[in-house]
Length: 133
Image 1 (cartoon, rainbow, N blue to C red):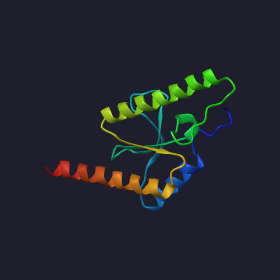
Image 2 (image 1 turned 30 degrees about the vertical axis):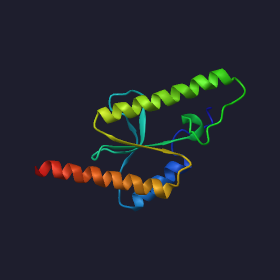
Image 3 (image 1 turned 90 degrees about the vertical axis):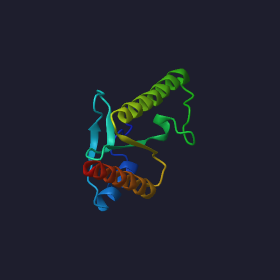
């Protein structure tokens, strides 16, 4: 497991490049407020948009996840804990007023970037409307 890339994966880098090229600025590996040892892959702190790009194996992708045969019970528990932690993090961020966007590593970076940019713009517009009223 020590050789597995946990941040700055190819998919994350591709999405970040596209977002930056679109003029969006963000924070990388931003700490989840109020939750120790948890990070947001790409965070738009002003708009409160959290982008999490999950690996298919580690986070249980319904299309691509595999089950190791060696030490199967240990792996099943490990991967189940990962998925539980993902749900807890999402619920916590939503309760804190964040918009949470989760993507799988196999999703096209261009499509991910378009959806992220739309969510950030939507949140920014909501914020402007709230200040005018």
